[in-house]
Image 1 (tube, rainbow, N blue to C red):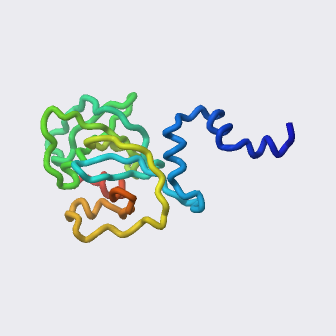
Image 2 (image 1 turned 60 degrees about the vertical axis):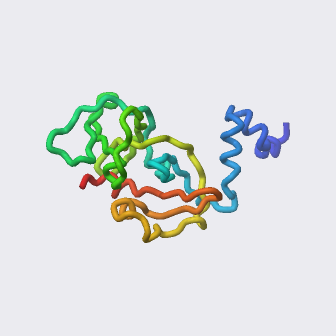
Image 3 (image 1 turned 120 degrees about the vertical axis):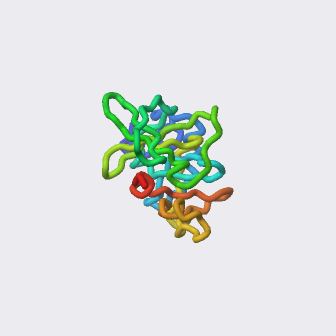
Length: 176
């Protein structure tokens, strides 16, 4: 085997070595590789809004767990969870950002994010996918957003079929 064969093994070989599913490779290829500073977001839904958190700030994602209520706390604080021995505050992102309450019977999902105050669990409606976005698609948040939602959004990415609202986790996790 020649040295240059070791360096350029080709996309099929890299995929085979990594044992990645086909759909993962397709998602990666949607990013424009000319931009080295593509941003990667873990995405989710709140009602019909498509939001994302930078992947570096996400610790983990799971079905919501049983919570211990916190008396006399903000309505946005859903409670506390025990995550492998660590007590983490849970914020109902719907209440925090001014959305209507979710219908009973619909189980929320949890996203644990890293903030300057430590890990915080965010309750969301539905987990979507991890996507890459080009930096040139970024725009400032529109002025038409609700005030509470607008303050927690750092910007908007115009995708082909929808808008991605990039959530500022520091502002979204500040209990009001």
